[in-house]
Image (cartoon, rainbow, N blue to C red):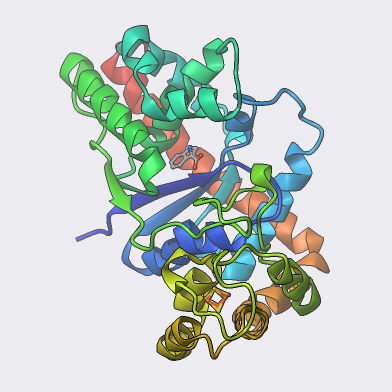
Length: 326
Ligand code: TRP
Ligand code: SF4
């Protein structure tokens, strides 16, 4: 039996942080053995929230390097930019005829973004975000889509659109399933539940040991624990969340030390910083390799785009046939 296919994607917003790794990339790396994977750089999706295109290309390259450094294998899995495969826009247009404005207005992810980014007037393309995402998935006949919980409503919309197309024109698309990423998201350095570039609370995959120490020194901890000797509550401390992920072998000790007061926050943070640095060391090494071989990175991209385009063209031929468009 041939492997099932996954389509995973991210918007290129610059260098990736450890939240991206824990919430998505780590999972993608594992999935690439079990599934046939396509990895999409969703550069057009960036336009839904910003018309400043000056950094999109460089951000795409930076993200691709982080993907490679984290262990995605370009031989197994094509990596490509949405903007370079014309069929995304073509299928987007067709799929836009299969869903109502009303349904798109009910998208909770859109509502959250409108609130978080203080958007006064939603543009047409932003409303259509999940339609373009559906085109991303269906063009490659993705059976599954690895996502965090905020993206589940989008995959639900993709399923509805696939069903609608198949019922109306004949079977072309599998109904994609959301593969929920297990590890919950990593909190930011400021204690926010989410690590995110726009909140400025990240540790980058490319941060060196000194930078990580400096960032952790400023991290928010249990406010009740002012100095060493004070008992703390690790459950409300983001540093403890990082220990759980990056220092599993000492997590019990950290918890006990924090609760009893024997462990001070400074020591706890420095221990945590060095564990994160150890964890990132191989990724940083690999990143350096690719940074010095930009031509190789560009070849990986153009090879990925050639492979993706072939699949996309075949799907669009089928779509046009079913629609009797020749
Ligand atoms: N919406 C996704 C995000 O913000 C990015 C994305 C675009 C995507 N197209 C996709 C994810 C297709 C999965 C499949 O994270
Ligand atoms: Fe957080 Fe560690 Fe301080 Fe406890 S000792 S509050 S876990 S930084």
